[in-house]
Length: 116
Image 1 (cartoon, rainbow, N blue to C red):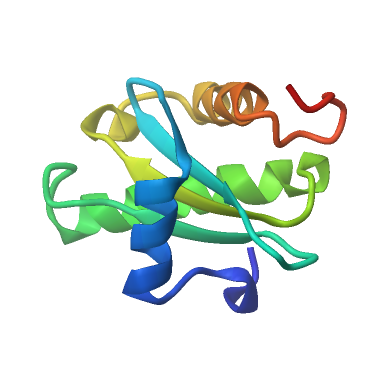
Image 2 (cartoon, rainbow, N blue to C red):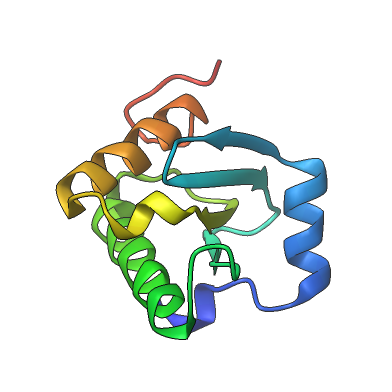
């Protein structure tokens, strides 16, 4: 995801986490909230519970990569916050992409779904 499409302000991230919908997997949590733009924005978060700086950066790179691979399938106009959990460091990348796709499907933000 391009840097211009990232949520960078704390207020924006808090808004998505507080007012948006949350969907959880053992390795990742996704919060979604519709925005008034014609583009998606995303924030990727890995707290200290994930591990040291190297592990947190690895988790964030993996989440960004998974989101980038699924970005053509996403509807536009959605703010996303992806939060890493400790198991993200130990699962296969293909399983991570599958988990992210499943969470996005539950959130009804994939193009091939009808709004629920």
